[in-house]
Amino acid sequence: MKPLADFEFPSDRRGFLRRAVRLEAITIAYLLSVLVLFGLVYDGTQIIKAELVEVGLSLTAPIAFLVAQPFRERSPSVQFPYGFHRVVSIAFLVASVGLVALGAFLFLDSGLSLIQVHRPTIGSIEVFGRVIWRGWLFLPILVWSVVPAVFLGRAKAEPSRRLHDKVLYADAEMNRADWKTGLTAILGILGIALGFWWADSLAALLISFNILLDGGKNLRACVFDLMDRVPHRVDDAAVEALPARIATELKKLDWVRDARVRLREAGHVFLGEAFVAPVHHRDLMPRVAEARDRLLRLDWRLHEVVIQLEEGATDEAGSS
Amino acid sequence: MTLPPDASRLRVWLIPPLAVLLATGCGLPLDPKGTLKRARDGTMRVGAVHHPPWVDVRGGGEPEGTEVALVRRLADELGARVEWTVGGETALMHRLERHELDLVVGGITEDTAWRGTIGMSRPHDRDGDQPVILAIAPGENGWLLHLDRWIARRGASREDGP
Image (tube, rainbow over all chains, first blue to last red; front, side, top):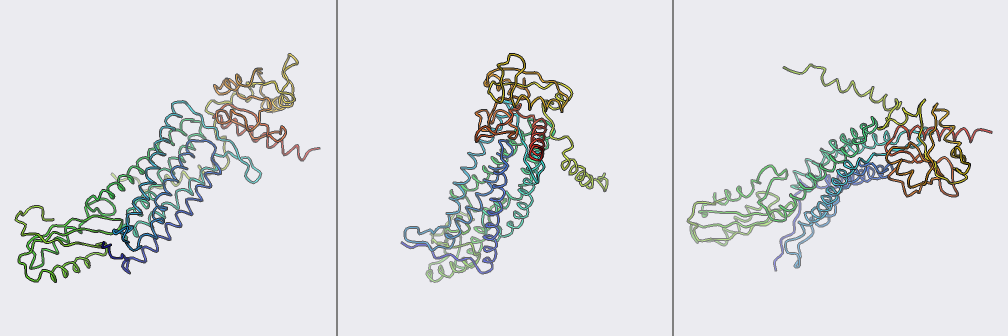
């Protein structure tokens, strides 16, 4: 058994990793504060129920990220020769499945309460000796659930790209889009204040729909990851250029006639194989070793590449 | 074809009046069914569940009891006439749910099985260790806030009073 070599982040990425860990810890503490505030004022309105689930969804990514943190650079073992890079994908998958289920339940629940004409009763609360409507109290809490989230999301965008971390990226995107649910909830509360009972269920319906979309997107990303889809950029906007670059790099060598590459992502590292057709058979051992070292220097994310020699591939196609 | 330069300022303008509106309450929240508006100088439809000493309907005429007196005082201040409906708790709660009543009294405590389907005021008294509340029609948030404020004021004046 030959496990993978140990993985270490290059020194220019370590700062981003530290920053990401700090940001995620802050995110969790912040979201817990939002959760506690919503829990304190929860009184059976659909909107607050939806917001509670929404905060739960936002918690999954930072928790998955931090849970995976100790495993990130853990040495591969005989039992786990490919290391532990996938822990984060698995943690995220489990969390996403749970949240999609909860989002679906919430969606049906809100739809049902709309059909059944459920009228939200929001009582009062005494603040500094004044009896005020509890609904007004929701508004500052909703603002608190949105504004810091948007800033956190923006702060996490750069580390997620630098670390090639899809969980961190999904988290940053969710935080950045938080203002939409916050605004929906605020409009819902104002709607109730104006005497529109359906504003509650309708706002909750929209929020849960958004939870379903977000959860579905995360789920898709996890499943694709675990299926070894061709590597994509962290924002999923395009196919990762690295496999093509490796093939090009190999073809530049004078002893290589053709090269084809297959890579897969395991968390933030790439593993894969290069199939190389040599022009001649002289000094292949040192040449292959040198080519391999050269490839590993190409990109810090490329953790291992196995070079497989082939008889001169005659077909010209498929050389990527 | 560009927007007027102060188009974006329009939204900023909206914030202060909105904030003032929220801060003062300004009559919000409103009732979806307009209960408070109808009760003011109008009629209050109250269900009475026999449950002495809170509500006693044995007299044959209008109900009596501490909660009945409470409702009368509330009605006086609103200038409302009280229209009593005497009945069992289940029947009256169902009518409350359907907005055929505005209020149900009868020593109903905070842990009532009806919580969640009806609205509940803040406690105005205690029955042993259980707070006693007024049951109100679901979703009538303005009405509920009015009752809560009235109960709070009454509680405060009773503590200060003789």
